[in-house]
Length: 326
Image (cartoon, rainbow, N blue to C red; front, side, top):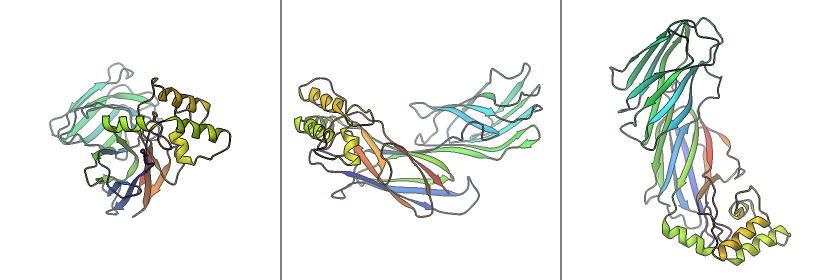
């Protein structure tokens, strides 16, 4: 939700449609929705929605992608670890599928035993085969190496699939990570198509332009500080969403420091730059939540601009919502 000088609110809606019932990684889903002006229903442009796989917790899979870093151009680096409890793993075979246009490079892990060797087959576009052998690895976790990937042709959509893996004589089930982003146009609509079964973090960001930044800053005045002071002494009650906006210093609460911060802003002292925040309407707006999204399930997002009751400018990071797509 976001408010402006007329105290209006923006709303962010989405629904999930599961298009098939195949095995994981082939079971493709689509997440679609819209960003609208809460009171009028007018679409909101310029909201970037990103749906990204949540990596498995360390130690829960025999092979894991860890410490994933995303570059500004869409390239990625990540560490690949094995976590087997066996002490006789002397061979590793990994078959990876890459996004179109992405090129891979591999760097051996520094903690591998002396004499351990790797071969990386990159002859087939969109594929990478890694084979390692040597003295048996110690009981996991063991960092096998670092994988670097250039940006895919479509920088807004990334996939990395582990299609086949052998740790010694043990076969590791395939899995993958996916990320997809898009920015709403004048219709306020967004969609994430062909998303495999996975647990995702949905984040949404809207950059505040110069005009909007000036509008929100100018809308903050003495009355906003008075409203906070009244809430502190019990003369008025702020609802949950007003408390988010009134938390000027991002201390996870509303107190005298917030009123003082606004008074400083009013007299021209340095103040925070407004930012957008997205929370789920039905949930605690401060804490990200996990939602099991079933067939045709719907939820509502509220998109907060970092302003205030009638509008307080403040800094706040974009929230996120985790989805279990099944």
